[in-house]
Length: 544
Ligand code: SF4
Ligand SMILES: [Zn+2]
Image 1 (cartoon, protein in one colour):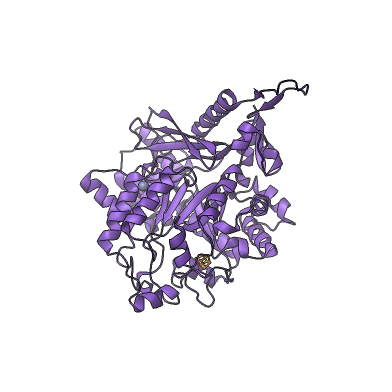
Image 2 (cartoon, rainbow, N blue to C red; image 1 turned 45 degrees about the vertical axis):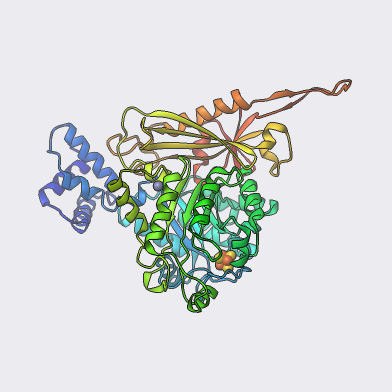
């Protein structure tokens, strides 16, 4: 019997009930056997081995205990949010709070804000502490999705941006790198690899120059503060840009391979229930929008905003809780299979919300209960992501749709009813790859782009063989999807001759796709190298 199996035996004998009991057993084992603090995943694996050998009886209690607070690593990665320092934003949005010592648009009391404030908004310490905390809860921390939040990222000074991201990578690398590029290179093999990096910004700040800048920083996803797609609503709320900016930003980002998240705000002044519902219908149906992810932030009245004054003066009236619940329910009912509803309502403490969704901050749970009671389903990715086991029969689904002048192919491994999603891939064929029109980033000329590959389920440490009883990870699902994407790109969008003009003696021209480029997070580059991809510019590229 190995050490971990012995630890499981001790765990059963001790009748451990709480996570504190579990931590104590782990500590004892680490000391007694002179090993590193064992992770829950390792112990769970040992538990299943013992079960198989019939050395122990199945115990729901032990299984639950070893999965304490599993949700954080159930998407296959752990998320770490790091807040930027307070800094002005050029926007003057009606509903946006300004508080001294807090980044624009945030409110004191928000958990992420309080954590950052305590650490003086130091990116290194914020990232380091989060990693340590997750480790102490036995979550594998070798695949990290880093989210930079706070204000309008693109408005911060460039020097600050570079320093901020470098320090986050330093925390992942557990040492301080000499320069930005070197630090990111170290992360390719580091203990805590940054597999995705996102920032939040305004649509009108997304320009060709900004796209190149974001790529040079290693950003893979952009959260756009879209809020509304109607110009009259944007204008009354003093957003300072129109819907054209959103449409252009979405196209520029997708054509460079970024994942695009829309932050949307129902219940803004100048909108109403009907208009809000139509707005979501339109972002899901109109090819100019089609976000990959969505955050639904119903307007909340907080102090230090112009909207607060409007509400006080009776110029603005929020929806009732029931109206809001029904609106979000109708959004959930229409969401396409390829969109993930990342969040519903902001993390503002309810005592700070003077009007709006103060009493329904748990809107997601309310709707989850309604789904069961009323027997309907939200098709969004988050609601279909598998939590644990790998079932044997998976089906490959393919869904094509037009988006921002390009073609999107959404591939996924799911159960036959599409209620459980195991793995997904987003492939984009930009217009320029098909017809040779203008492209911004030279390496993307003639490239089909993989914008995302993700396998869900309990995160397994890197270099770890599969544990099918625990997780669908490391079973080659992602690899199979990549092969399928390569096949599609080559067979359906590969090079084709362009019709020559009569009488023209020039050599025949070819358009179409001749390679795949992946907007890979720094920490995933080695995974793609093993599949024959090479780093070119900031993309992992393979000729097909
Ligand atoms: S752009 Fe964002 S941060 Fe700036 S004022 Fe508007 S809501 Fe606030
Ligand atoms: Zn959902």
